[in-house]
Image (cartoon, helix red, strand yellow):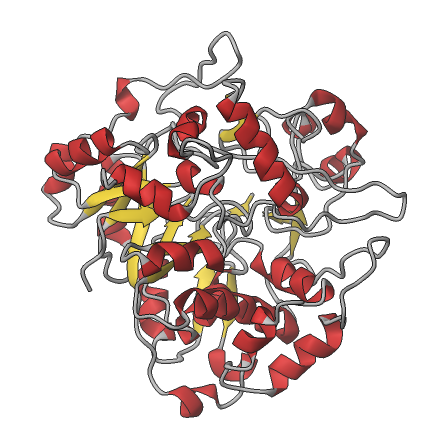
Length: 476
């Protein structure tokens, strides 16, 4: 498979949804769906009534009917829930997840990829995070059941994924070594996934699956070398992401220093040597600040296979961002008032995280102060070693006392946001608490968010994914 010159970035929770990925794929480029937190997204779409029927149409094409009926019976609300009803949330992952959690996670990825691929033969990818380890096995399998063409993964060093893809293509049991805080060097703590236990006899129904290409996201030549040396299967290329990209950024190399605004300072040490990358003999795409035809030309001239673009698509008509919020941030861009801040504190992972500043969102100190700390989704929880062989789970954004009781340092809780709930609100699925508090959004975007007004045609107040592609390719 020849991968296109433009990859649409896999953004946030359901910002890169199936509608956006399909629009890009139909235009003969690589459309990418985000698989992060997608089990909650599927459950929420069903609770909202799936009024257009897309989710249930995709589920009807799943190879087995029993898990489909089980998920519908637990989450589907005909006509949609009322605004005063909270969303019903699937359980948080642990190292021994219940079968239903693996089923709904796999189903959610199947639905997203199936809808993105429906009715055409273009290429579709799924984006996952190494930092969100526990759902990844079920997520990969569900996406592969739908025929996903490419797996893209960042926020860590995903040495295990390529080998897992090889095994899942043949419905073999797989396991995932977890990063466990406080673990000893010889500890081997894993989460397991057996396709034929989660979906009994499914291998007999569908036969061997296509093994998707694997493109890890890297920020340095050293990381590329480590992946090539330690990967448990074939790597097919790299996405090289610079610190101007949205979402999570790799920390600067060397001691962390902050600028006058409190952002991490990156230096020449963080610039990837593309001449060394070419020596690996694998294709690579450049990401972070490439939303302009000049950057595309420069990337190709430097030996890249193309570019990955995220922020330009985040505010387009087809993205999954909640409609009013999208219009509000685009208005700030057009009025030249948009600002992006690289926060060293916001993400519970400890990675720098790009935040678009917007009043009323969790980037607003007043809005942040109003939110009661709660951790009920757990996608970004860390696994930590307890006494003996048991493990526990903690998140720097959970209630401070709970975090400290679990062995966490109180200073690690300062400024942390519950990205799980915040990003779901950004996609239009805010949780309503018993107290009446409604979860508020947080917007992540790259530094070039301020330039997306260039995609808006004269007389218009919005733009499409095709407008982005036309601009990048200098088409009239």
